[in-house]
Image (tube, rainbow, N blue to C red; front, side):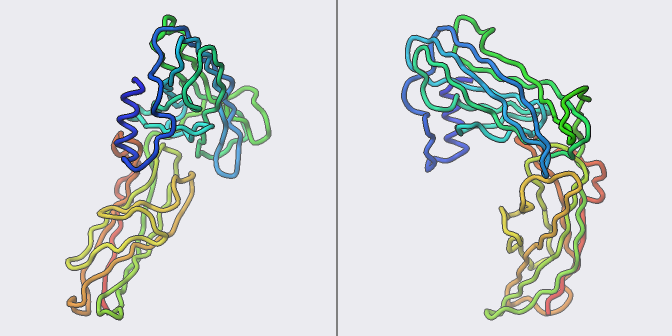
Length: 305
């Protein structure tokens, strides 16, 4: 993928009002030897999964200053966090791991320049008392140069045990299927000063596994005359509502409220039954399937007055 394509995609994703630092100036390099090398990615246990940084070094030997394209393939699906220093990125379709397309951070490289930066990762899984490892990571720098073999470096993710050991690592295998549940309570709507009705549907979302996801979403179906008013805590909410708080750790449970309202002309009494469907979203690759889709749907009664 060339720098021009990245610029166009980023412009579409981020919008015309977002400044894309370092995306103007010299073009991508023409032929000229460039090499990329990586250090070791060690993921350290924390109170919320594992975190670690991969050192990356680019040696640029082109004839003119140039921006270089960077592609990072995740060793663990959904593990990519950010570049340091930061640079705008776009995400490829999960297969199941994603390839993330960025620019080499720091702007254009000068002829003969050697630049070092890090790729940061976070894996939201339960920490273990033994070391783990997973291969499959890859960093590629595209320059269209004479020696493309130098442009790619492979790496593995090595998970340090909770006892501090890296010895005898076991394979880390992440869940493929999501394992989430949702439950909901009834809602009683009350009159507001302007005559309209307002209420809260209490909901509990629990995620048991560590399958890759960017967020969990709620798709409500409400009785006639009742509309979505948002969520509490607040997050993106139009026809579907994102569960606030970002990605889930295995075993994490969150309680939120779906806010609902109805116009003043709605009569008091039983307004019917609503429902909500919980689903996970990950990249542009569609919806990961769940272990038990039946417990991803909850119903609730709605009453006015």
